[in-house]
Length: 225
Length: 224
Image 1 (cartoon, chains in turn orange, blue):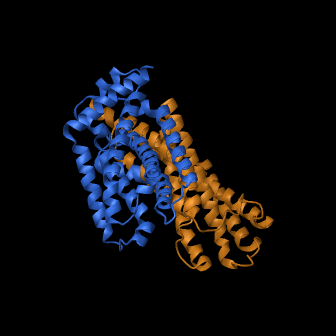
Image 2: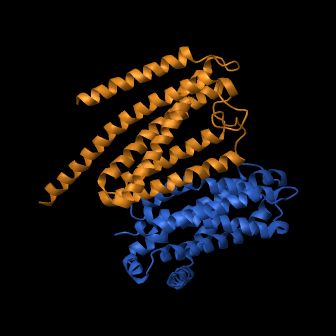
Image 3: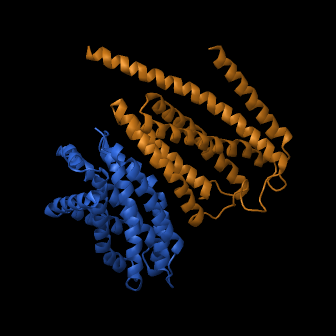
């Protein structure tokens, strides 16, 4: 219990520091002015969401391989946490796009593929609610999670090649692109803070899922006897 | 070798089952026809407009039709209690998938080719000069739809609300197929048609990725 509280305090401090850095340390953008500072929330959430989905994919693969309940619990927890961060991305994206590009939603590669990704993981969670038997639910959703994750690069590639009219990636993009070094450092720090938040949420959600599994088992036994 | 012979036998079984009743084919054809007519009300289907929207319309209709057509794929086996027998009869469960996805690709391709002339007439798009290329795109696209769809119908058949679940799982997964094949088809419908090789390569890549995934994970989908 103490450890959890300590972790929570650390994450809150980290998030506060990241907010301070993104408002006061990072320089103001020449073209976009203040609004660009949403980058530190938007991009950091996007990377964190992807990290969570990647964890979910690993957990799904491990479940198919090892068949241990804990991997199923980790898979669903990571998918849910990833969905929360992607929702933040999908909300902050239009808020940023409106003043800068003049429209709320551009069918831009990253925004659109994030949306498709979001839909895929919503489908993953829906599938889980529709299979009663725990082992079957775990296996089927793990397999769907693997298929969905394999689809991500394809979704991104197809939209980027044919459906996008918007800016090329700035970080890790083609030569000539790039962030100001201070901005990049603040962004990486914000990502770190978000990763801290993700770990905290993931850990709590995972424990809840494990307890839920135990409860389900006890209830089954009680009903059987 | 046994994989090939098993697949051939099972494919024969799939085709026989379908051609006895032709239920799937006839309902899918009618469904796509309805979608085509309804779509014509959303824009003015002159030649110019059709060149712009036609390919997207066509592929959306195919995608929706496929998400209905793929439903009975495993449901049939389940309601007739034949899945266990099927599994016992083959050495490699991949043969079951291979046969089913070959049959589904064939059915889809058949309905697509049946409806292409109707589409060409209704929407004023000349398809004859690029027919062989269209055939290639239809084949690669339908193959991708069938691979992903066969895998997911094995999943949805084991869940509640399966009829609603399959489109929910399948359609977002097929985004890359929709984007790429619409793009290639639009290039073929263009005033001066050209072949979008990148799109054709992309469709082939999608097929290979998901076929490999199905080969690796297929047997788990059929676990009892």
